[in-house]
Length: 292
Image 1 (cartoon, rainbow, N blue to C red):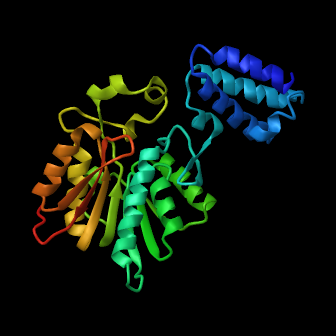
Image 2 (image 1 turned 135 degrees about the vertical axis):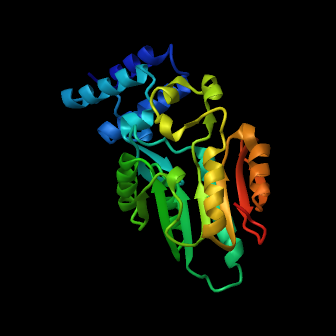
């Protein structure tokens, strides 16, 4: 089968499920992955024949797309903060909103170090998944020691491979943060994007996310939606340096409640919206009045 024929078949099979712009994006990503052809090359190669082996891979990918499996899992990779990351069904697919959280952390570091000799920073990330947050920070901060925690051994395996892929050093620890009483050291910054989607919000989640991405990393019970935030904030009280900073990605519907909880624990907290106008991040500075 020639590329042009496969593209016509591809469009026909997916036209009732996805908008054309998304179908085109899927097609170009798959062709680049399997045949090594960029979008610009396709105009000159529409009559190129696809080998039986490559066609088998492409047809399998098409079958998975028809079941609305995320393209990132089909490819086994994605991009975050301009960097390549391997993904599997044991890890959440990194989101653009989380890139904004990385931006905010980097801005804070730049502000702290403005006009000073850059000191070595210690950063802890909780709930690492693919490792996208700590790896992106490590690539952009020259003098930093980063530790990252996740409960999933499978996620840790992928995160370690992603650190190697991006040539950075991260200390990954398999650990359940909810049963953690002590952290390994004091940190300048703690950052986390913990599970925050309530069960009642499942109706808002796209089927491809609901049926494919790990629920352990997504959902919390309706009656205790700030479970992880409270626990991490309590640990941060004792394991952030003086004036250390705690960053969270948060549930857009629980911005007020999250800020109130952090304020009650003695943090000075700023709430920030993402590019879509949703309450998405908090930055909390440790004070002399923090309490568990």
